[in-house]
Every structure is written in C-alpha cells, then in structure tokens.
Length: 164
Image 1 (cartoon, one colour):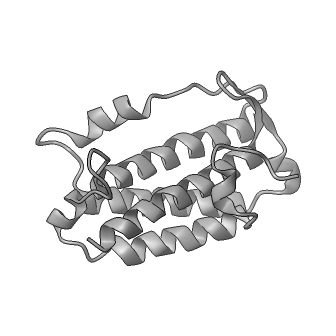
Image 2 (tube, rainbow, N blue to C red):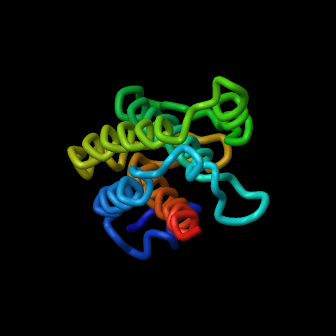
C-alpha cells in the first residue's frame, strides 16, 4: 500500500526512487549552467527564489535522510520537527548566505546519497517504523515517498523560474 504523505499526489503513482532520480536529473539540467543572478529569480512575487528553493531542498534531504538513517539504526526512534523558515533564515541571509551554485551542489550530493541508500533497502527495511510528533507513526517508506513528492513539488517551481 502506498503511504499517504502531504506530497503523495505529486508522485502520481510513480515509483519514488525512480522519481527522485528523474527529478534530481531535471534539477541538474535546469540549474547547473545558471549565472549567480539567475538563482535570485522567483517563480511568483513574494515566493522563495531559486537559491532558497535549492537550500530548502538540500536541508530537506539532510533532515529526512537523517530520519531514515536513525530509524534504520535506532529502534523506537522519535523524530523531531523542524521549522523550515527558521532553517532558511540561518543559511540564506547575510554575507555568509549559501550561494545558488553551492546550494545546487549540496542538494545534488545529499540527494545522491539518499537515493543510493533507499535503492538498497529491502521491503522489511522500508517497513521499519518511527514516531513523529505531528504525523504519528510513520515508516521509512513514508519518508521515501515524502521526499520524492517534495522534490517534484519544487522542481515545478524551478522549471517556471528557468523560463523567466
């Protein structure tokens, strides 16, 4: 049974690992040749620019990949929530903010690690449970589906930015 995540609809019944491979390849193709100023474009007024979307994607790969790894290695693991806006504020602003090309590299690198991990998991591994304070009891498979749908959600925004 397919886990129901906030991004299940974005997956449209696709295999999540294949979707992650396709999405990361698409993001690489779209943004790898951008100039620094192109990362500062947004898909709509008041929305994150491409640099912030890529920072967010990298942060999500780190956070959710960590959750999956902890679930696989720590029986009874209890995940912690995080505030994406507070995370964004500490890594995107000021003179020390992460540059767009570096955010792209961080996302692609962490996504590659997660895809490799997930591709090697057995069905039993993917069924291991964790507890989450907002979502309740989840599985590693839920995390995989969440991550795949989340990437698809944001690649659409990056595609829109690429046409501007």
